[in-house]
Image (tube, rainbow, N blue to C red):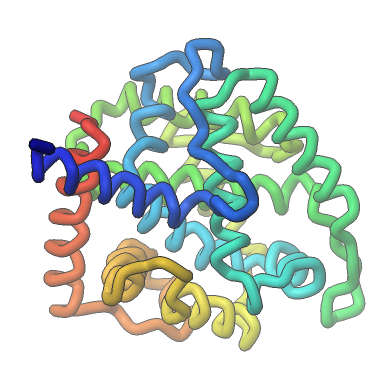
Length: 279
């Protein structure tokens, strides 16, 4: 007789994999490789393996990225984000998985593919100036927003007392991918990340379009997501934003509503780590 607990665990794992992989297109989870860019049990693989930390951190990162006029315009001009938000998020998650856990040849091929796409993403901003997606400073903002957010999500939900040395190592590892994508400047420590984050903040601008994307990210339920999960993850991500970021996006501080969101995401994280047999 099949173990009902094991059956439940396997069903949960399959449901999560279906959310992140388009089975109709033949997508499968990225198998971890011993010949990846990064060794097993190192900070980047621990951080990027935690689903709830990555989901809440990913939402926070995307909200911050949309405050950069160049990054925002690239999405508006060259993406079907409004019509296929789930597909866009899936592709981003797949890139992170391949470059973190996949064989180094697959990781470098994925990076080259993204570089090729970025080279074609060009256009004109509302003020008449031009933009290009592979601008090093724009890529630097995208990277530092991601790195800070993913690490913040992991520390919030998994390891609040993560040693500073491991945080620094996370930035050093993630810098390998950022430099291969052409970002500059790229932090290699938490202190450098904080300094670059402050430096690049001057490039950000509030806009109706950024608020529209924020509304989509927070309120449009991706296909296959259980009811309530999007609001729970979004509420936790908004709570993680700096106050000035919420202000620029027209978002209210969660207040007391952050407490149930935090509790729910904490419980969800524990359940998923059990299902995927993560310690």
